[in-house]
Length: 88
Image (spheres, rainbow, N blue to C red):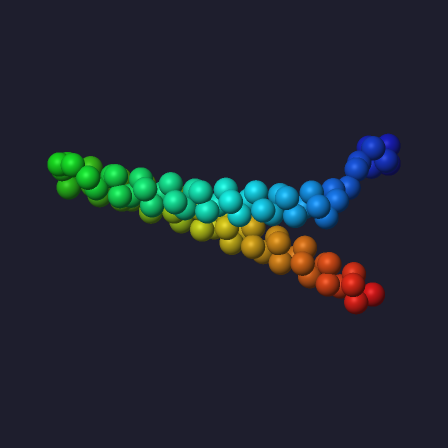
């Protein structure tokens, strides 16, 4: 009860800023992965090194996709709540 009284709710403006920052960050990460993928295949390397780098980048890219999906689901919940509030 005491802790909740000190809790300050985020404003819609703060949430919008977080959404915007998150989208920029996810886009930046995707571009960085793409650049790493391009650079990872440059130069003379063994097949094992190429395969390892590809696997690591695939893993990172998959992780980013899962984070983006989770973010989208959370954002959809927020949008639904806003729409529900407006209906009431």
